[in-house]
Amino acid sequence: MISGEIVQKLSRRLKAISDPTRIKILALLSVRPCCVCELAAVLSLSQPTISRHLKQLETEGFIAGKREKTWIIYSLNPRRKCCRNLLEIVTKRAREDVEITRLIEKLESISRENITKALVEARAECG
Image (cartoon, rainbow, N blue to C red; front, side, top):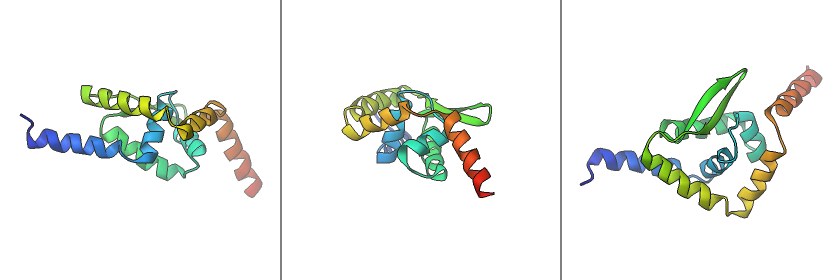
């Protein structure tokens, strides 16, 4: 029998992966670990928006962030069996989508080093 607590946890996890942006993030992370700047560049969203989505996915146990130099690199890291099962379903199905295929190709063409370099150069031009 499923208790109220289990139902609540499952509901939160399903809500976390039901958002289109978070599905795209999970699909991208299934290709390779990424920092916020890479995901923001691929999805054409602000870094704070990406960070909010990542926080929810991390809170619900789907991903984990690890500090690497100046970046926090996020990767798929399901903490529970149910999270692993849900991730498998979501990422496999999402990768069949034409838009996500395009986003994956875009991700494969960028690097965090190049994004950081471009940001530093843009700031130097402004200041």
